[in-house]
Length: 456
Image (cartoon, rainbow, N blue to C red):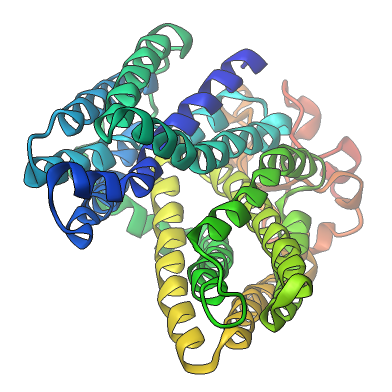
């Protein structure tokens, strides 16, 4: 896959994710334009989020059943029509209904991720995932600024209409840019796809591990940002909503850090990156505690702490997605559905707990919650259950012999990849034996040298 195509797909991710967030900035304009209360206009954002959750469950798994090019073109076209309907809505009920359809169909980013994981070489997968995540982050940050500015100039309908045109243009681009490929699970019934993520969670321990890490990281992230509004507008700072928006722009630095995290995942594997990201979240909690004192020192601590938290959380997401996509090449979209659903559930729980912790005990309790969530994931990472400590920390991902069909390799026994020069030293800790006939393999076993594949 060329860098140009990865860049195009990153822009598509930015637009798809931005469709979820730009209505947040024009809520007051919608309330004024349709002559409804502000809390009623907030239903537009709620409907979009509910639709997105439904799209994750109902549509994203189809990436394993339908050609990615066709699915992306259809989804972006439907998103364009839904945005057009929202921009032309005469009253609030049709706008809420159209917003739900926007959320349902704007799942292109979750379809693109598994697709790219299957098109790039394994040693470039982390970088590609980091680039896509950088685009998603940019879309999330810039969407509010785009819609707020355009809405002030031309009214609340303008952002919807412009977004509709952009989505339609991207649908045309996808029709020509994305390569055609037939999914491996094309013949499986749709009903099976709806329940497959649950079966994968039950059968794939590495998926459960990644879900735990990301749910904990995103839960701490959501707890911090949800409670931050209460802190900044409270007696310690007495600032307005504008300060929260400016502080959020600090997260733009993650657009530069996620590709770097992807390179580290390609070079060292997801395990070490997970370790550093969880330690980074713990460190961010310690820095954020100082933010409760107020004043210039506190504001500087909040800026540094939120930046560290954002970078650590997003870097961990790159590592977790790289691990998840390597598990089952024929089920990457269903794996992604399970993973992202768990991540969003963790974020929802973190927001709920963060607000209640702040209300009951203040800002230090929120920081303690962030540290507790990260510590729980860190304990799981350092002390894995039901498997040798050494193999768990080196993040050994089972994968089959790549040349089973070519030379009928004795059963195609799974082997542990990503060991490099350490494989000969920890061969006795493997849960499955290596391929017994490495010398006759027409393809080189990824992550396994000839020395480590030969039995002692």
